[in-house]
Image 1 (tube, rainbow, N blue to C red):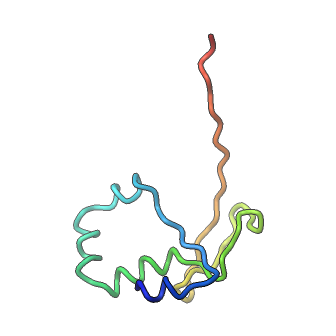
Image 2 (cartoon, one colour):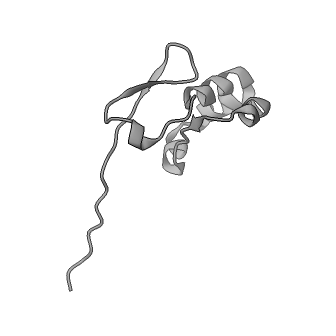
Length: 86
């Protein structure tokens, strides 16, 4: 998979955050490590080519992934920081 990723010139790879990775059962993560083809499918699902920018996307838009026939839905959330009053 390394050479494939290295060869990309215009792509977006969506990476889950640490919380999402920790939520995946260890048995599943180990099965991916033992099955390089399955790991490649998981990574390719998170790959979008050509690359995308948030400014060009709409909320709830479906974008085709690196796996043929598979799409990922873009959802945008606004975060607000709340500071305690004095």
